[in-house]
Length: 220
Image (cartoon, rainbow, N blue to C red):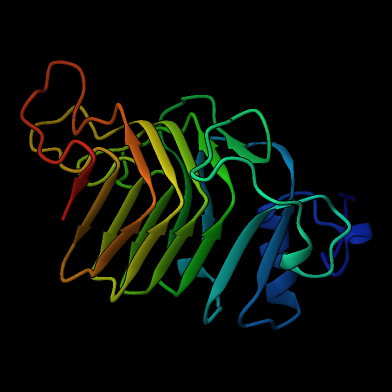
């Protein structure tokens, strides 16, 4: 990436996702795709990507690129599906500081072939929090993440369709408050949830002194 890259090519790659969103908005792209090269991306505290504040109609976040491709089909083949390695691929990592969340969206969104680890927040859905729009999660590995109340990794409310496919959720937990539901995934408000070929491992609805949560892996 370069400091002032416009994201139009790998040679002009943006330095981070917020900069890429700014570039897409400046170019009046209403349906941008964000291609992310393999590597480690450290995420600071706070909400990293907020699509609810952007003038996009739909978006896609795709990882797993070597940095030379001209189409997603040219990417190197994925490793294990569902993924099982947090040391390779496109990795977003937080440092377990409170209130770190990766994506919030209310438009049709695809998140594909990325790993998220170390996210913790007082918000629900620290990897993706979606509402009122379709959501696709493919080949995503959420490892060691902790949300609050409604969905540790993914929270979907009133979404017409949510697809989770070829993904893995490991050590994903909800919050420490009473009434926490959905250790890995929460889907409610007439959300239509489909899960295919995905693994939920050591997930829990709540942690600490709270033991009354519902839906250790899924709540819908």
